[in-house]
Image (cartoon, rainbow, N blue to C red):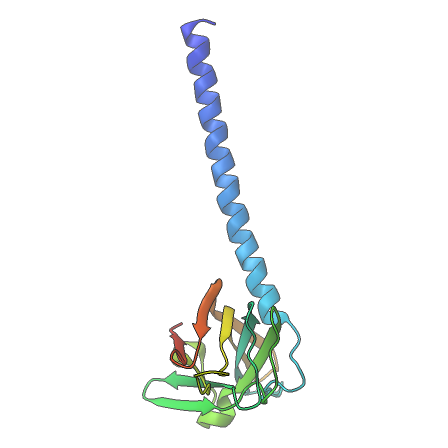
Length: 189
């Protein structure tokens, strides 16, 4: 091969290398977006909290929880969620309804912001969402692996059209491990 042919071949390989890297990045972003949509759209267990009604003026916080390899036991070991706006907060207690969230399961909780704050709340008013477990710790105490947390805000306008904003989509293995000593985890949109 001549010197010019070698240079052309190297340029072609370099161009294909960039194309492959670009395709890998685009594929990864598409998969993460698809995972967030699937995780926020799953069905809720009958015991999980659902305060929202689909009617004009309603605003809700929808939380999707993916449990990893260690379950949320339920009974006396439960999950509370605190939503904070500018200068105000409210806590939804025992959002799992004392039920167990088994290993590798998905659960959805819907909190009515209009009911709890007395007015329609918009997504940009939410400053943090905090999770708190009621675990006792010690021997026989519960632990829980939270692998994914998705937080979305939806509201119905006067025409009953639903508007949805994904505020948080975070995953890990685990994202956070709750124990008797580590009971709190919070996110900011």
